[in-house]
Image (cartoon, rainbow, N blue to C red; front, side):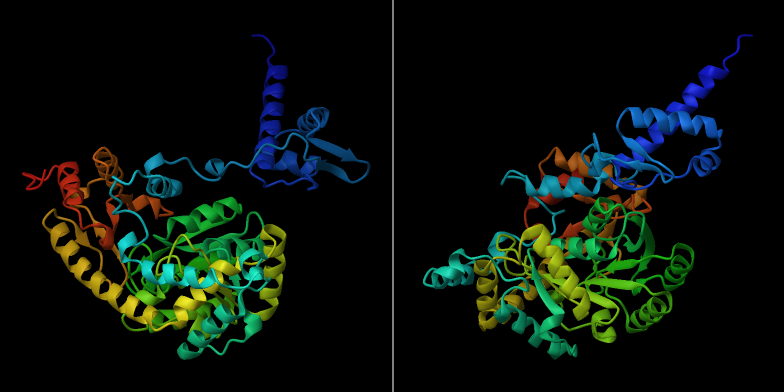
Length: 473
């Protein structure tokens, strides 16, 4: 037999080079970072030091790394490939990818029905109040119409938020709140401030799919904690704290997305005690607060914004076109977040958007609008539950507010398959595994009851599920 030692060494060398290229591509190694020493990399990869030396020499010849005398090898940043979000996690079927529902819903033709989307229909929104507010702003001074937003955002809107916090029992001050371009940007800024590539973040399983997308963009290690009708499973939560030493936990405490559940007082206290013991920071997304008929426990209220960061926005209740979010946190964290927002967006959201929102919130019409929305949702929820039951779809729980129903398909049917079939009938659904880190929600679908008034939704479901005779065609 011929000697193939040289071929094997070449193959191992190329494998090492590929591993380094992959770490640079997904930003595990950034420009200026030091590579492992020859000896340590050889031990890690189970090869000889000479193979590592050859791989490093070839990478240096390519300009990917450079040697510093007596200091090792460093990433140069040359030929750095663009960061691809699709490569930041295990491959999934496109219809259970966190971006799939968002893309389909945002880009859908007006004729497409969207019971899987995450917002209210346009005719449920306070459009008359928005038009009135825009007319008033048209008479405002020129600076409001043309200048950048201040670094903390509109003082009038922040004062309104502080007043609402005080009603809950949060004694926040003006230096503990800042406005952002959206709720999504609020989470992005927090991740920029508190995370480094490779840090572990806990999320609920299931959770809002864009939490996962953002965390993938920040190169975080995502660990899911099973979610119950009373909040995160506290035993699993504690075990994850011990085993994974996470930096953050991101959650919705009330009207949880996608399940509609609300954390219990006992679970909230337990989570806060464990977070304090393990040095964990909690990001509480309170975007659905105004959909609750009665306030429920909040981690930020119990904690007093010490270890908990509250975020929110107005896109669900007022307008997704006039976007604005907020962050409430410790004053020192707000200072760092402001700098990051200046660096990435040059200031807070524009004065037109923030003053428009402040004007609507300050008027008595906003409370009336939300009262009407809650009543409409209660009726829509009851109707949707009854109609879905006729197809064998059962809610995991009955939420006390909001617009989501987390429903299980009968007979172990695959929600991704159902979603594909419904898409052929121009109905966009949200399959369960879009929300599940562990991919354990195969038989679940998330429904938006406000988007289910058209009979074609149930007709499409009936045909997709092969339910006997479908009464509507």
